[in-house]
Image 1 (tube, helix red, strand yellow):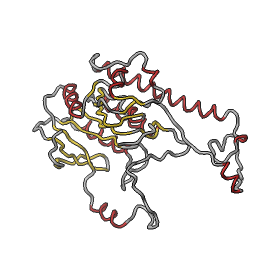
Image 2 (tube, one colour):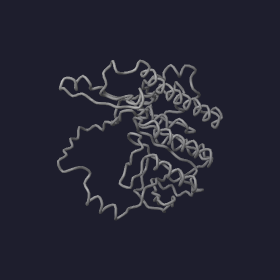
Image 3 (cartoon, helix red, strand yellow):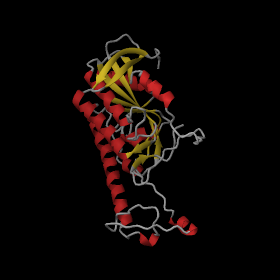
Image 4 (cartoon, one colour):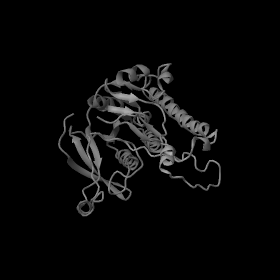
Length: 320
């Protein structure tokens, strides 16, 4: 992809928050293709000092792309192992509603990793392009926790718990095995399977709708695709065979496909960013992220922190 440097083009007003339009590739066209990034772990937590999350960012950028009559399509660049169930679902809904409301296609361009929640947010896109070596799939749900009661007993620490109901301390990490009600594991597993069922329904509905919009030009789901929806990761090539993606290629392939679906010959590639705020710069220098006594060690890997009691669409692998 040919970059033209970050050339400021205009400011798009999104309610109270402005978004600055940046030209990524200038092809001297009045048509535009907006490029949106889903990078890293998908979470509802703020990702910047303004308090905005990746969910907020995608939603705001889609509104900008929808309201701009010159934007003919959107490319969703996905490089993510997934993340929180709710955050992934909110992005999914935003993409689905955008295509329905504005009648503009969203093309997913998968990078090195588009697994679990990374695939979930790609599922509603009208066309999905993956690299042959993309790691994707990992269709499943996980809830993670620890039980450290054995360690507590060794050091003589005993919890005192007062509760209103037998399941009020569900998932508590300090209970003895004998204190866990027999039906509790079934309840948790039922919740997991309910969420998993929604995931597979999202995949089936998204691929069916994209096949309808593409008039059969994309890849339909293989008859045995659910056999591979057991949490395993697959390559882009395997995903194509299963009908989880429509084509193999890089970002440029996704751009060409977006132009084809939008029926335009040329288009500028644009990106939305928050405009520079001098106040934010002063806050950066005036406030530290952690106490002075905190020492951070960079191991070259960004491990996602799974919070106890939360459901995740996430693959047990990290971004390269």
